Length: 112
Image (cartoon, rainbow, N blue to C red; front, top):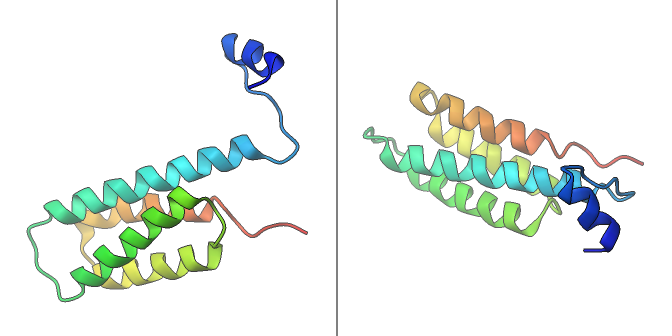
């Protein structure tokens, strides 16, 4: 961390970066938190459904992708689709699934 960034952080300000690193870091953090929440809720859900293993596997893949950063948006979207399909209409998991979707959507398509 450079001296100017340290000073900005000490007064509660965030440095502006050309690369958008701060934004990407917050998106990665949001995706990781959303995936952890859905994994916890899925693990605690008493219902049995046939595709639970698929949901677990794809959530694990999303966790790895979140830790690695937003390098594979299409892969994240594919995992999200598989998780949504595996969970189906389990309404108790809906809010956590929507949080994951919002986090994935936060990465958006890379601009030109």
